[in-house]
Image (cartoon, rainbow, N blue to C red; front, side):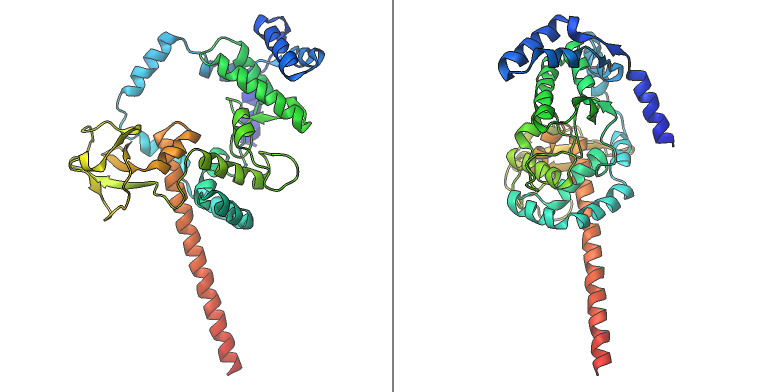
Length: 353
């Protein structure tokens, strides 16, 4: 019940009807869609004549340059314990247990996808789990209204959202679905994997061969997430990350983050905590700020690939952590099943005797 009430509150805060057909940018957009994609202008004018203005998404993207600089300074400040707070909501027992169930339900799809794209099942699952808890929370924002608001109301990413709006109109028209009935994130991301419309176009896979790419259909989503990682350079059987040691409790010796690469030989005083780590390529130093100390990790190329899905070291590390937890749980489950089968077999032998 509380989720229903929360949804109603979110929608009531965001909704009020607005006619965008008098907006100069919208008129230019309609002209472009008509010339470039042969859309009927009457159809587009009808769509844009009644748009539910989305206040919250605009607030998130509409900050001024002055405020952006202020926010940037705040982000650069050290907030000890930020990783503790972040991971607490991303890697939970619910994410792990439901991830294992999700894999069991679609095991045959995962087997085929992993073989084709080289991306391990647990990492695909972790992304779907953290994005939407396996499809349970795909977003309550009307995607057309959200993208329209962000495309034509002044904000720092107008051009990006115009392109996403173009792709979304093409997508829904091609699939013959009601454009006003699709909900998603505050940025217009769609489905179990939270693909933006442009990502849907370039990375979506019709894995169940029903003639359409459906981001709400698990088989298609599993393959599409794997395809996204594969096309961004995922190395099959490659490393992702390993924790390393350093002297002290807070790390400031080298620049950290997924954008900076190092030859491991140049990183003095840093070494893997758990023995050898057979990885010869350059690494990133990933710092996780905990309340009492900083955790430091080597991030491999596959770690960087995960950041292409979401531009955050914390996000990528939460995916890695959840994937490893799911893998461990699957291993335990497999061992228990094997033990029970051996036990059952031995009992049957005793009966025969």
